[in-house]
Length: 297
Image 1 (cartoon, helix red, strand yellow):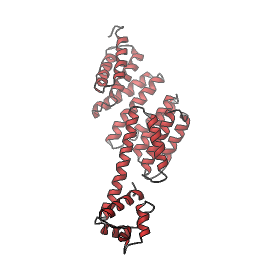
Image 2: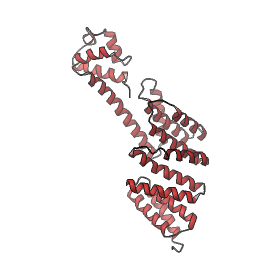
Image 3: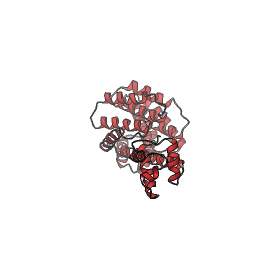
Image 4: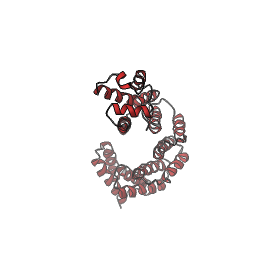
């Protein structure tokens, strides 16, 4: 995260007014009035020595000026990423597209860091594809460019999340081998992060689902059951209902309806009820209704 000219300028202007100083009075013996004007308007950053003397005259420490500016930028980044993630939960790609389009324009005026820029670009391309503005091939190409950027300021975990989206798009469009390689590569990293291990649960579900659509039901079942074990170990129910459902559907394709299928479906149903995912509960009920037509062993 970098110091932002505009944020620092706003804070210096606020402190100057709080101390009842004019720009000329603040600048006296430190720099010229036009320099203060440029700093307050965000046109330039003060040098370290000027910032030191300004902080003295404004009755704050240099650390305060730096930390306050950084905190504002960090809060903005956090609130923006949370807003986009909330839109993702409801698949509101129209809002994501509008927000990320604006952020890309604002980037010319202020830079909130390469990790944030990558996050915005990622969701810009993702929402563009979801809205039908670009083809899946163009989306994959642009997302691949983002993760191939070798900037030292990028976060590896975010790269893995983008790779998951690439694999999902490939799988949705029947490019199973490429998607499979990406899913496997993500799972091979084994980062020492709790968030990474929870993230892999989504990968297990996505991979299991892909195998199912590719009619590789044995592989789909094996991957889903790995995800189930991982979810129980981490006490993470975020995709556990989906994994139970996927495992049950794969079992039906392999052996027909049996007691394990019903057990998985009933567990999935309880989880979906707790999560208030009514559509999923209805889907499980439809499978259980179909299963009731058969003799369960």
